[in-house]
Image (cartoon, rainbow, N blue to C red; front, side, top):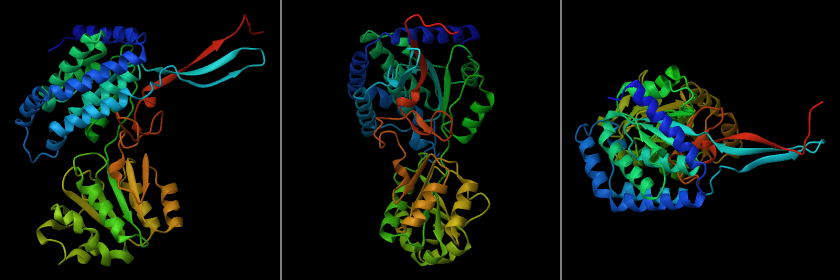
Length: 419
């Protein structure tokens, strides 16, 4: 186990790597990322062997199992996202705005990297690749702190990244993997002066822990408690497809549907709206009106009465709640009470209702007649994401390259003095 002194050495090495990275041409960074993408695909068996070791220590019934699992198609997607990031323009050095003062002094607002970014995450080994590509492309180094459940995968991933960095002429300390224990997390959160920013990715409990214990700045990437409201003017064809996709495309991700809200005037359509999720054996926790509408049409073994824990729960599995409302206002009230402010959706053909929903819902991403499954940096055209921020300061929604830069003011003149 690393000692306090060892952690200090790691942090200082990362800071030195950040300084060296600032001198690297963006084209060299892109070339290195392209090389790494190739190595991910050519070295997939080693990565999968390490991942199988992690999977062997986790029950397949654990909601985190799917997040932990890698396969060749997922590695190919990771490599593809990395190539997309490599092809994007780095935000570092971009002139955000400029103006000249009456005395001739020029003031420019310029985008600059944070420097050293720490990421604390759980169960998702792909995060290591995504975080690295976005951080290095935006001019940052990253310190990764994964969970013990993915430790074998994380070690194999970081080993591959560091060997690629070295072979491409970069300081391998552009990425650092911390030990998997709690002690290293505490060291990272207390690294004032060494670490510029920490971003947690994981459960509500992890995010709360980081926020409550960090002495360095934190950007929260929140848990996803996602709702879809089927309005009285909703189209059943669109609704059934959107609900099925949002719930079942990948149940373990933060943009998956947790609660379907339905207007009471459309309860007769509820069996049709749930026909797709029925094929995936989704357990439904329905309030009394919804239960009555589904009873006899939905498998009895999968239909449950909702209780106090059914709403405001991020299920991360083949389960969802159904809530009946009398009006748009009641739907908005339910979302306001239980939302994690991640992703919320309405299904409606009424433009006035839709517009009111989009204006009133307080969330990072608000959808009209679209699945919440699209809350993803790659789907937004950002190449990849470092997380979905649910807070309102600095960044909100999918955080990609621009959000990994802050800015500074550069002032140029010709001998001006203040009187």
